[in-house]
Image 1 (cartoon, rainbow, N blue to C red):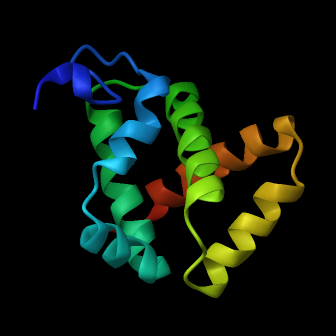
Image 2 (cartoon, one colour; image 1 turned 180 degrees about the vertical axis):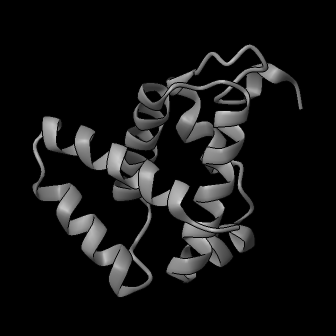
Length: 115
């Protein structure tokens, strides 16, 4: 797959408009495996955040991408466990500013995961 089909390019730039298309490309079985268990979701997120950090993404870029991913999940995925249900409810009641801060906290949560 060519570089222009990804959210993050080799030079570290982020194409936030590609989040939905990129997430839609995850096979349904793999998506279920990731989202069915909160620990699996957290581990998956941790690996992606660590990869993004390795190529030089800033905390602000990570948080911006996390916000777009959270928007996508809130709009297109049903929560599969109590943790995801809580995250969705918090996301829905948050203002734009609160969601931005919450996305940053989710990045920090992912970084605290031991892989």
